Figure 1 (spheres, rainbow, N blue to C red):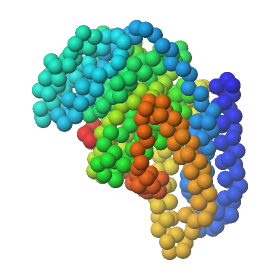
Figure 2 (cartoon, helix red, strand yellow):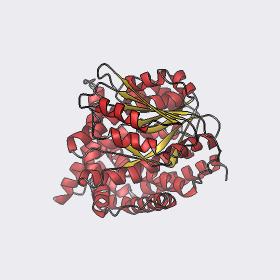
Figure 3 (spheres, one colour):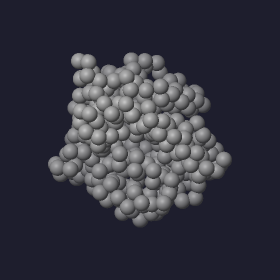
Length: 435
């Protein structure tokens, strides 16, 4: 089935589901309108039930009809450079470089570590690893920034001091599967013409540390992976994340490199999309990263992501009007702001009211979204589990983390995102921060 036909059919089915949701919620709408007025009631119910239902239906339909194109095998892969921007990663950089040294890549690899003014010994450790791990086919060198200037500046220096046509970025607190580099390059070589970047699959490495890391394991394994899979299916992954992505040098140079902002990866990705280029996703090129284990760290990270999204809209709003399938996801991201606002300022208070018997916002009708959410989780779990099994990986038993991810995670995540939007709108001081 042609891709555009799949897109139209999935879109039509999702709109039909939303239409059914609107029909079923007419009594709910009447009751809430009597309290707050018609338009406020429409706004609240739309972003509590109708829009999330449409999104879930579209994701389910797309995953079910997705057929990933096979990777093309080549005996000799092109030369590639890997940029590793580090700031105070003494506890992790040794493992990161060791995982790069174990890659089964059939071509020359140059790893360039850019130390961004670390104060904890990262520079010395990186230099030691470079001496020990370099070998024929793998050259590791270290660049030292005189002071901390931010991730974008560090990556741009690495870009300026390398020449390979393919550029891969890896975070300094990550660990790559031995086949990750080979698979992401093969995916780029196999993807449709016009592809200028490919996002790798980022998963959680430290999920056993505490409850927050355990529920983030499901966020990366379920939510983020599924959205990227669907976006790439329609030729427009919206974020080639800095943690692990491949870019063509020509595209990076044309875009002016990484912009100096808190959301450098999403702003760069949208700059590439605005040229009409395609960004893919390699679902089985796996990198495991360390996620925040403290609530304050988590909040800073997700606020940074929210601010990055607003930066992308500020610089590349014209994408809203590009005539291509991926434009749907640009509008989708635009809806995150009202979705998060309504959840934080209406639905959460509605849950409190429901505890006292007032079911104006949270009540029996809101339970109708649960079956679709359950189907969504089942579909993506089966898809991701098959991907893991193909690589001899096992999905860890993490029932507690899954229950909190499905029932309570958004109660933390969405208010934090609202704080990020507010910080950007108020033009508060920006800092890339650390994990």
